[in-house]
Amino acid sequence: MLELLRRWTEATDGLLTFDVHYQYELYQGPEAVEACAAGALPLCQTNPYDAYSWDPRWDIYNTPMIFDDFDHMERFNDSPVMQEFRATMEAKGTRIIPGTLHSAMASMPIYTTFPFTSIDEFVGHDMRVLSGPVYAKMAKLLGVNGITISSSELPVALQTGMVDMMHGGGQRGYVDSLGIADSMAYFMQPDLTTSTYWTFMSTQWFRSLPKEWQEKMDKICEEWQPWAHDFYREETVASKEYLRECLTEIVLSDAEVVKLRQKIAPIYEDYAKLHKGSQAILDAIEAAR
Image (cartoon, rainbow, N blue to C red; front, side, top):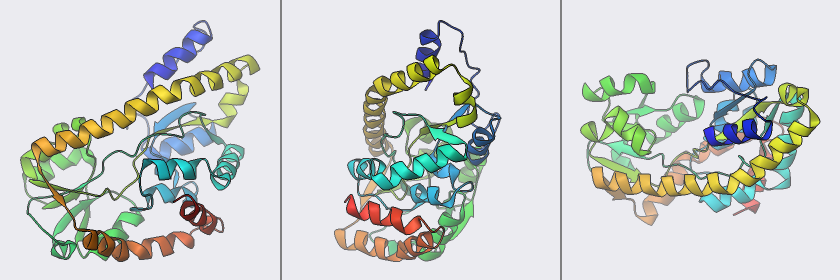
């Protein structure tokens, strides 16, 4: 993201500059998206599912195992349904910067202190889950005691044994900063979350810029995207390899993966009821498989 900002500043001969505030310095994720929509913040980089409180259809990126892989997600992102959704969002105040729509799905494994061969063995354990109604539902369907713990509080929670399972990021920096490998012994794929980072921009702010700047900024995004996308993919692969160095990977059998999908299926049914356009999004995802 810093590279993109640098290119924008350079393209406008230094007239367009940015003060960078890192995660949670100004807003939580959902608040940042809403601040962009209101014109209080020019842009923010965050997970697309952070926009779910603003429009529930965004919760599709919060839905466990909804995409098969990176390419499946990208085919959906390019679908007419998603393009129409983006246009609706821009009209409501927040545009997605061209070029940032494509990004890899970062590793979001389940960590445990204990070995297992079946997801039935999760029942009754205390599991840290991400915030939001989707994960509360997921915890209930898996039969675990779902506990929401912020990242800032996780190190102490892990050290004191508050949970013996957790669902969270798999990036090397995340794992090291929270001391996950010191408290957890195993991790499991497949990922349960689509973790991507897009850049949301205030429509109001963007349209206030000179037309020439708008065109330059969009063009730079399109040029920058392939580099950023490849970088993210490489980092995701490297992070998973790092996890295998620190922890023991548990690979579920095909039958267990099917069972996992069946257990969380009610989440998809709930999503279909969130908005009158939700079913069209689910249909587009199926068509993109």
